[in-house]
Structure formats: structure tokens, C-alpha cells
Length: 137
Length: 496
Image (tube, rainbow over all chains, first blue to last red; front, side, top):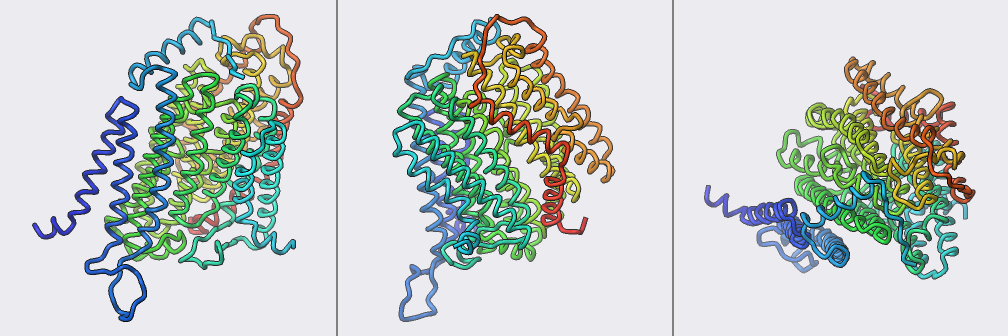
């Protein structure tokens, strides 16, 4: 029982990180904290892939004298390299959006922003005094 | 020369917009960046038509990327199923690019226009890659290319309305969570089968009945894709993203973005997991069927109470996606074919409606709400006429494309002894007339401000093209219907 629990130790870590990340994404109202959560969530997936790519006593997959040596699967590592790049792009885009939201709204709290949006929406639609588009040329 | 071209068509469809997107960003001139985008999307459309003809001869094209043979290398698969979303995406993106010419410089500052066109092409390339690839992980990469590009495009709407930023942010976060869930699913499947190639996965899964990791992996993949396809409870990102994006971007996204993901959903359900029949039939019956029915009604009712027209159309998109997933959920050959027919028809209907509404917004220079529409029907007869035709098509009146898809959908439900679903579809269609009539009534019957609007041919030409297709495929739908039935046959075979 104990050995089987410790034997899959990495998967427990993956599971915990995944839940922490998902909770931050869904539960936090701060836009920056959501991105932190998203990053943790993605990192847990990286760990998942790396974990099942590793084999006990496995060597790096390099051709050597003894052909029959056990080696770890290199493919998950390569996949995760790609996933890391995607993750960095997502984080960068998210952070730049948060920056723009902060300059436009003066806040990155979801409650403040939806309160401001609601006022705008009301002005737009209920009273009919829709604001003309301003084009910044 | 021609031979090399036909051999490499599957990759050319993806590469053409991808490579042009790198060049377009360097062009400072608005006109030239537009013309190169148009040429690129036109070429892509041409390639996809050639590919369609090729498919009629070979019926299955497998393209080994970089000559690394599958299942080790990445494989691009084009078959009778994949060709439908390819033609939809490339065709609609060509029409949307024509439409963008006049609209884009109005809403986005001049110095960033070429960058926007670059992102535009990148999004199209991502969507096309999504439907051509036969590799589960490569699919994730294309999923992220298309969604990051679309997020940036949506955020460009911030120059007009700052809410676009929040919309883009929500789209990004929800989309990224969805894509990551998909990757977890792919990882679990890779862990138990040791392959990423979809056809190879199908073979290896057949030995693994009731494996827990298989079921978990399937669940993660399906949920991830359902987020991207905006299936009912996971659609929250959609209305805002469509409503606050720049007009041309709304047209592109509304008509193409969810179609690619819906195709992936169909492919995962009926092709990759075709051997685990219990799993699939349970998922269809207990997950997708109820969600689609709720989506049909929730989307329509939300649309009835909505006053912002772009959001209204976005809510109606949620309902229409409900019809498509409902067709998949019934799971017979006729119903899957109906799903593909509606996928095509919804692309041209929603594309047309968004073009009409955004050109109204362009002329009145205001957010298009129900109050702002008064009397515009008389001021802009051509746009209004096309808008009415597309609306009728959405409601499913005879002689329009929407009628054909509703007809086949209802025929399919009746032939599989699910009369109550047919009745629900009819009620939901009838409800959709409410919100469509609401708009038409305000535009035509109500007295508006006396404004003179000179309609611009560069704007309404694309609207006329897409409306023509709405009517044409209502009169003679044999092309779409045949293609869809062939696709359904390819997906589930002659078994059912």
C-alpha cells in the first residue's frame, strides 16, 4: 500500500499542482492571479508527461556499446518543449492583456471591471445614448 | 509541376496563409497588405477546391510531413470528412477578407493594420492545420496557434471599446484551460498506447476495453475540445469575444472558429474512439445529447432578451452549435450527415448575418443595439434585403440553406424514433423567429432618424456573395448533401 503510494509520488504531485492551478484560475477574481494559476496548471501537465517518459534505471536515449541498455522515452520531453513554448506565448499574451486592462480600467479586479462594464452597457443600451465610436488614428 | 502541386496540396493549404502572414507584417501600406492577404486566402481557397476534386478521385490522402512516414512522423490526413471544414474555412475566410477592406481601417489605427492582417492569416492557418493534421499533439499546437491569434485579433477591438480587452482575456484563459485539458487527455492516451498518430491510436485502443486511463483520457480530450467548440455550459467566452471583436474579425470567427473544433469533436467521437462503442454511446446519450438540447433553448432565449445585436447573434450561434452537436449525439449516419450539412449552412448564414450587422454599424458609427436600428432598413435597402434573406435562412424557411439542414436533421431524428427531439427542434426554430423578427421589425417598420446613407459596393459585394450562397444551397443542395453523406459514411461506416 505504502510502496504503491510512494511509487507514484510524481503523479500525486501532478494531481496537487493541477488542482491548485485549476482552483486559482476559477476561484480568484484577480486577473494576474488567474494567469499564475494557469501557469501552475500547465506546469503540472509538463510534469505528467516527463514522469511517464522516465523509466527506472533508464539512460538517455543515446546509442552506445551495449545495445540492450534500457533508455527513457525521449518523445515526451520533445512534446513538452513544444508545450512550454506554447505556454510561454500564452502567458506573455495574457500578461500584456492584463497590462492594457490596467491602463484602461485602472484595476485588474474582476468585480471592479464588471461593475464599470455594466454602467457602460446600461448607457449604451437602456438609455439609447450610445457613445459614438472614437477612432484613434 | 502540376504533379508536384497536386502531391503537396494538403500542406499547401496550411502553408499558404502561414507563410504570407510572415510577409504581410512587413508591408506598411494598408492597401498592399490587404491585397496580399486577399491573394493568399484566394490561393488557399483554390487549393482547397483542387483538394476537393482530388478527394473525389482518391477518397483518402495521407501526406507524410517531411517524408517521415507515419506513425512515427507527423501525418496530414485529408479524407471526405476533413474536406468539408477545409472548404468552409478557406471559402469564408476569403469572403471575410474581401469584406475587411473597407471596415478594417475604420476600426483599427493605420500603423497596426498590417499586423492585424498577419494575425488574421495566422488564425486561418491554425484553423486549417487543425482540420488537416492527423497527429494528436500537432493538433494541440494548431489549436493554440489559432486561438492565440484570435485572442489577439479580438483584443484589437479595444480601440473602439475597452471591453474587448476583458473579452479577449476571458477567451484566452478559458481557451488555454481547454487546450491544456486536451493535452492531459493526449498524454494519458500516449501513456497507454505509445502513439500519437490518430489512425494508429484507433487500432491500438481497440485492445484496451474499459481501461481506466483510456476513459479518463477520452474525457479530458472531449472536454478540452468542447470548450473550444463552445458547447453549451462551456460557451461563456463566446458571446463577449464575438461582440467586442473588430467587425471583420467577428465575421471570420463566427463563421469559422467553432466549425474546426466541432469537426475535431466528431473525429474524436466517431473515428479515434470508434472501437470503444460503450464509451461513445454513453457519452453521446448522457452528456452531449442533454447539453445540446439545453444549448438550443438557452442560446435562443438568451438571444431573445439580448439588446446588443452582435451579442444576440453570438447567443444564437450557441444555439446553432447545439443543433450540430445534437445531430452528432443521435449518432446515426443520416444525423451525422445532417450535422455536417448544418455546419456548412451555419457558416454561410452566420457569416452573412454578421457582415450585414457590422456594415450597419459601420454606417451609423455606433454600437449596433436594437434602439439604434430604427428605420435603417429603408436607408440601406441592399444590406437589409440580404439581412432578411440570411435571417430567413437561419429560421429555416423553405428555399433557403437553413431549411435544408433543418429538413435533414428532422428526417434523421424521425428515422431514429426520436420524435420528441424533432418536436424540440421545431419549437426552438420557432423561438428563433422571435429574435429575428424583433430586428427586422425595428429596421423596417419603425420610423428612424432621417439619415441618407450611401451604400458602398466594396462592403456589400461580400454580403451579396454570401447571401447568394444561402439561396443557392437552398434551391440545389445536392453538393453539400452528397459531401455530408459521404463524410458520415466515412466516419461511421455502413454499420448503422
